Structure formats: C-alpha cells, structure tokens
Length: 338
Image (cartoon, rainbow, N blue to C red; front, side):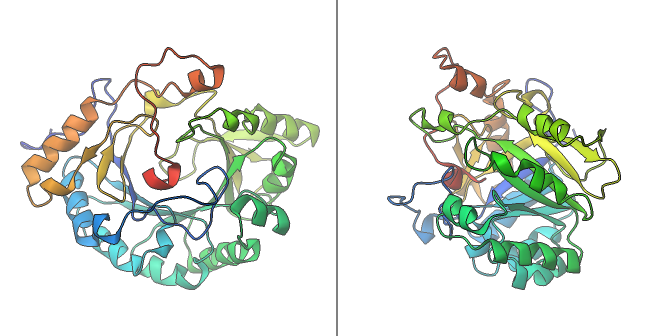
C-alpha cells in the first residue's frame, strides 16, 4: 500500500509489476501458430484503444506498482506513430522499462526513433533462419528484413535483443543448434518457447508440440558446455543458459510442460480494451468505460486480479484432461497480445 492506493497483489501473494499492452490485433504476417491464413475478423478502428486511453491506463496502474510495460500486437509496428505512444508512456512517473515484441519486418527503419522515444529493448519473433521455411511459417515473411532489424537494434543500442523461437516438431526443431550458435559471438538472447494451445478449439496443436527437453539434448549432442545464468534483463520466465565463452545466451520458456504460474507478475490489456488476468482463460474486463475515473479503474484492475487462478492448467490440455477449473479462451494470440 502506498498512501491510500492499493498495490496489485493477488490472493496467492503474487505482486504484479508488469503490464503487456496490445496496440492492435492486426498483423502483416499470418504465422501458423498465431492466426489462420484467412477468415480472421479484425476489430474496427473505433474499437481499438487510442494512445491517449492507453497512456491513461498506464498512468493509473503505475500508481499501483506497474513499472514494466511491453507493447505487443498483432504486430505493433503496423500501428501508425507507435513512437508517440512510447514517448507518452516513458513520461509517466514509475515506468522504468518499456519493451516491444515484434516480428521485425518493419523494425529496421524505425529502431532509432523508437529508442529516442524511450523504448528500452526488443523481443523479435523469428521461428526459422532459413528463408524458404521462414516464409512458410509466417505465410509470406522475408527473413532478410528481420536480420536487418537485428543489426539496426544493435547499432542503436536496444539491448538486450531477444529472439523468440516457437519450437515446432518437424518444422524447425532441426534448427535448434543454429539458433544457439548465434549467441556465441553476439549479444543475442534466444528463447525457445513451447507451442501453446491458445485459441485452438481442436487438438491439432499437439502434432507440433515439442517439450523443450529437446533443446538440452541438442546441446549434449553438440558436446557444448554450458552453465545456468540469472542476469538477463527482462520480465520473462525464461530459464537461461550460456555456452562456455559465448557472449549471448539461450533460454527455455515452457508454459505447458512446466508452468511458471507461481511467479507470474503480469497482466494483459488487449487492443480492444480488455484486462486479461490470465492468458489461457476467458475472464476479461472492459476498461474503456472507466477511463477518466481513476478510482473506478483501480477497482476494475483489482476485480480482474481477484479472478486470476493459481495456474493456467495448460498441461491438462496436453494430457486431454477435461477436469479444468475455468473456460479456455477462444481468442487467438493475435487478438489477446503475444
């Protein structure tokens, strides 16, 4: 408690200092695990929170203990003048860290302006280093543009640079060693992420799911020596390692096989203005109606936090266990915020 303003602590004692904000549900790519190739219905522009509304939300929750902001989408860089929003958030007292998750296609020419506006660092989604395979997974993406964006971020000092790799059985699991090799001579942090069943009404996702024990098996096959590291800047739940003598690192994010809910410190704000306390479940709270009423907004965040479960139970989805405590979300990752 700071004065009369409550802190964002849930009934399990988890303190929340991190808000992920989706600025759009639209994307220039159609990654196979994120959205279907066709048939997506996007929100009309008047349903999407304005930058002023987003800044007002951040102003309120900063007083409740939020100090870290991540801007996501869809693809956040399809939203015009994102630098303006970054600058608005950077000016809010209490905000210490502003990061961006992007597919990297549009990042290179904007990296310097984003840094000048107050962006701290970037996470770049990159599921293959091979041009043809990258194009297939993203349904049209150009891997060269992403590599150029990595170089641009290094040049302007956006650090650390994290590469997010959704590991998929039979699709990109043969590139594990190639991704880890990137960390040997560059300050790049590769994070392998398990395929999650978010917004999938069928079990097809199981065909691509691969537990991240495979990453460590590859390291042993390569006869690489590595050690655990705990000094990577950021908010994520990655379990991090560094090859002996390497500059960068690699990490494992395994929300399905080994959930990290006991240390969860995040809330989400969707592009259409819903607070989501847990990524996996349907519970959501519309914030737009209370913008301008700080007390009501604080209470809404507390109400949302009060519904947050102890864990998301995604491992039960993998096992086919129907005994789950909440209703799984039907919204795709692009609609929630990656």
